[in-house]
Length: 108
Image (cartoon, rainbow, N blue to C red; front, side, top):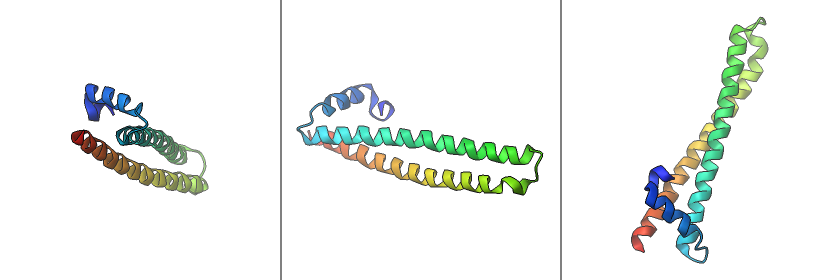
C-alpha cells in the first residue's frame, strides 16, 4: 500500500481508516482488508508452489519410480493452480478498491 499511495498517502489512509462514520473511512478500511487478504493469499500461494516444487524434485531425484509420487505432484500442482487463480482475483479486487479509494480522495 505504501508503494501505491506513497508515504503521505499511506499516512492519510491510516487516518481515514479511523473515520469509521464516513464513506471514505469505510472505503479505507475495505482497502486495507483487501490488501491484507492479498498478502495472506500470496503467502499461501508461495507455500503451495514450494510444496509442488519439492514433490517434483523428490520424484525426479528419489530412489522410487516417478509414477509412485504422481498423486502428490498432481495434488500440489492443482492446489497451486487454484491458489494462483484466487490470488489473481484478489489482486484484481485490490486494484478496483484502490481505484475507488483514489477517486473518492479526488472528490473530497
